[in-house]
Image (cartoon, rainbow, N blue to C red; front, side, top):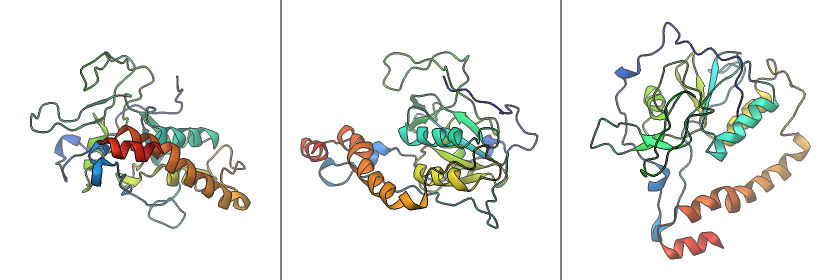
Length: 245
């Protein structure tokens, strides 16, 4: 079970009331990212800001929060980077339930399902498939806005894309998403917060190995990480066989 330390789970006095947020775009999921012939075509992440000294997003301890699902491999590598660099006391962490749930359960016309927050003592969740149940062990709720799901965070950030993914690196000062691309969040953790990291000497992206790391990452992403999605989300036999090769 993931151990989270240094987290203040009290709602700050000036937290934004999420009930005032309105939908900025049509909600959708990766299951809808289909190209010709039923092939899965992943869309690029939208929030691609960097944390850097002298920029809008200054590297400050206690300012940023990481939202993840441990069921998402992209998000999980950001959690690994957070702990490897010793940033768990400087950057907050929330962990969603590992199954998708309806994000607007009271709206019959809105069937979107996505990552939902829970507390460890909550009753088990039934997946949207209606089969089985999964307990809430390891879940860590949102301490800043008491969001019920990740969708509400995107709406607070006035997202216009409509795809509510993890990981999210969130700025509590600006009340917005800094970055939602896992590879870039990893690079941010590697160097931007060295002044507050307990292991600043650890370099996960050494300059003399960057070309080789990028080469390996490109291969792993195409044929393994994203390859699983291309096979699993294919809606035609032709698309599945192409992905499998």
